Length: 363
Image 1 (cartoon, rainbow, N blue to C red):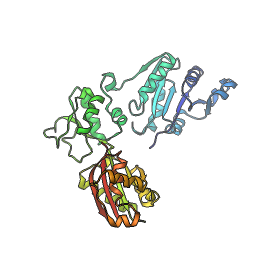
Image 2: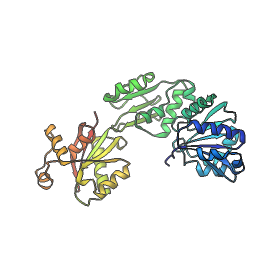
Image 3: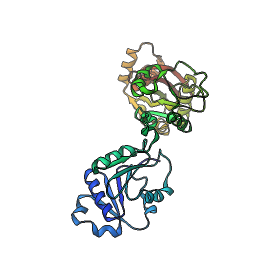
């Protein structure tokens, strides 16, 4: 479920309305104040023109359910107990729920209630407290202890985390004072040393042994077994797939060919960053659908760009048959390299039922 945009401020009382108005004047555009219909007469006429104020009728909980996923953040100016009871029927998960901050009507405290790290409620609570001259209340265990918020770090580094259940165990180990290992592919080691120095990242050289009882993170694009139940993958999106295909090839065939290449190369699909091809294949329905199903960009390059890439990389595979048909001796290998930012070809051209696939990794 995608999160919405903008900030919603919901209040129930006249004193709360004053705090809401103060916040709305200070926050960026895209902020909407929601008030019970009975409070509407309390809003001065000029306020309706200056701010977005919307009145609602009926009980609070059903109303919050209507707007809950329409905004990326909710600021509830009311008692925390009221907020908890009203929101409880609508909660999904920290990955889907918006940031929720509860503010007392006097603006003394801004409490990060839901989606502290991933949803941004901790950051929003601090911002609200700063605007009101109050105090932010953050209870996230890792943050209280000064530990790195690993879920937020992974997102900021554009890495997918899997499996989710294992990540909860990793965070629990960190909060409980256990050592959490961080094993990293060589090209990313310096990067992770700077991002997470407290975890002392080490080089990932192969399948880790003897880690069954420990907790840890493997930052890799390779298909390697996890050492135990308290380990997770961080998958950096560094692999680009160059695709060549005949006209009319269905998406299913393209995806199957791509899956074969990834399996044979020993690479994870979760590390895919993009699909790529020659520009006149950009409108190919099967290729577009394949990219859409994977949630990836489809990048295209001109024949001149692909030919120039092949000149710079004389080791790439060349096909006279392809050259006769489209005027360049290859598509998938140079497309993969260009999509990876002049990356390294790590899996050469393979063919399957009218589809060619090559894989490159960003350096």
